[in-house]
Image (cartoon, one colour):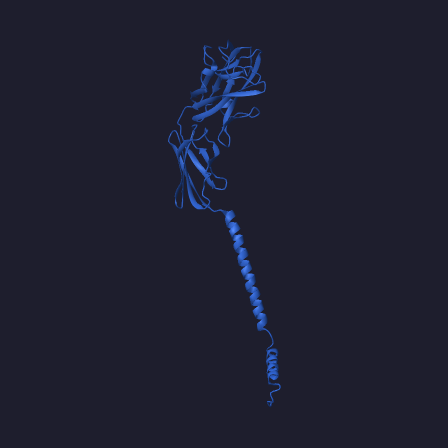
Length: 320
């Protein structure tokens, strides 16, 4: 099976086309027998086996164009990006999981015009593989274009669906709640999230559980954001996030925040300080003036009073 790749005439060309108007080459799980286009068959490869099993399947490479095309094939591991999207190991990277277990009959396939090539491949599950889901992909490249097909592999044995919600934080200034989801089990999860928030005067948010645009792979962590654009400017809030997924996976986490409009507080504080500063300066000036008056010499004051009395008696004939 691993010695050759059989060629069959394509039943129909894929519907999509490139910018030049010609139909694009494509890859997909083989529909079998060439009776219908591969695009109408399975959307991904699904396989299950015990550790040590060798699983077989076939990839269809379709070339609807007028010229021969050489397509390169490789296996890749599936990974989660930090935001939760699913990606695959790059061509320069070396797969360590499912991608390393895939072996093709030919790694480079030359497909004649208007023809579909059926390329057999195997997935050899190591004897020490852990039970659970091991997602991967088959990646095909030709002419500067790269496409892939998912490989959904499950290794036999006990499975556990578990997840945790971690690092919840309220960022009212940015109008959002940030948090992490971690897959603590060995199955792929498509989680749902419910959000509840309470303030001093009652409920602020009450969002029922809804699916997240995330496919969380086993053992992976993703950082996500929940929008909260109408968060109060001044309040004390308690936020609770509850994540659920198939297999009775469930977890909740909370965070508290004191929301204060620091810009307004800073402006009001500056004005108050200016008023207080002016009042203090005025009070000090009055105290200095009072002290200055109280510190005048007593002799000068008495001399002035005596002189006034002498002037008042002058010309009265009164004896002294």
